[in-house]
Image (cartoon, rainbow over all chains, first blue to last red; front, side, top):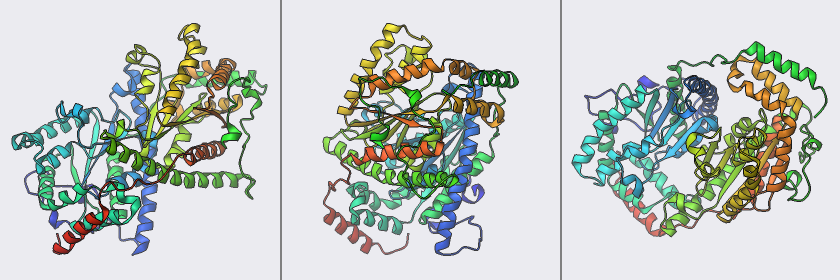
Length: 303
Length: 303
């Protein structure tokens, strides 16, 4: 999946219009078609999620042991972590992806953070300030629902800052992500790529179903009117920040079941590159067994 | 479930030894027995979890709308929230409960916080300081994996503070929780109640399975040696802090499937007391539909 969905590093411009948002790259030619594919893919997501949960537990156990050895609190230890960054146009399916993919993992190991319009306090700091505070601790899988990329997307298209400011941010982001990678963070950046037509349908659904009204804002249609500008801003972010240390992946997202399946597999391949295992006990196992066994034998009374 | 498992407010002492940790209060007399019960209960947890996820979404949507109306950031709005506080002896099953029960909900709506030994910074503040910082924002379901109750449990049994200090904390906790309840937090405090024998078995499992060594610490057996002191400390916390505003529930927890089933139902009954529904749109739905429909008709070209 990584190779199929990855944005080639630097150089060549990315043309999102050439990527079919209804396509399903990497989907095995299994003997399931049509409606069956959806059920099959959902089952796969649950299975991969359970596997990721087991692997995340190893990551956590290892990180905890490393912190103990170093005499540090768990969150300051040198342990590894994974960070999934989700970006998309409105209705692109960020929430749905988190619900299905992260929802198939163990919630205790997740560190999910959503980024909206910056608060006054956040605006008083550098754009990466709030991002640094939201990073997953060692041993966790972080999920960013939007991210620092908003600062070269909406900030650029809606002119929230001047051009000189957002132009310098690509390099700042690359330096930041290099630093994270060196610090043991495996970064997986995913753009959920939906088509203009699909976005129109999903927005209309939000206006039709009263249970979805709360997800709609009139500004969504204003942003939709600037679709091409947003796609161009995405293309530049993908091209300039698709690095070795922190690659970008474009996941066709018109089909929700494929989207979830692909993101689950990207995470799985990220975990496959990590040195996973349970740490050795930092106490004398035989001695502790003996101590506990003695205690169990000595206290036979029901309590 | 609430009435069955609830600790009667104040007055009467609580005798945990009289509550059978293997019992299954409230379990319907369904035509399932033995091993079947486990599968049935697990299925129920998934079903209730999905229901809770839908209800939490309403809570979130309502809280978001209320904050918007008040012109406040979402986390400062007046919306309601739920807080599940989990306490237990070592091996009591806090992590497993979170994995199964919270894991059946939508991770986007969860706010899980674990409390370990206080850091130096935390020790420089009042014991409720770190608790206040970890409260779920409006619209969320918070889960506390251990809590401020450690400050009248381990702090008391291990004499981490002097008696005069922990003695005043019951009243401080009650005042704090009354304040939370008045602020729209529905608090569900659960003690997962395991037997001394079951704890012994689970500790031995952790010493036997190398994949579980990381969960074991020699201090666990030291704490086990003070079992009666801990049970007495629990009993006093249950008696003194089982209030109308923030009731305590004792969930028999030797059987993991029952434990999860009971906690899921306690949450369900908590949600049942909330005024749930989707907020009305704060924009002109007909006008927006017209605007979007016009835009969709005008832009028929594929993009």
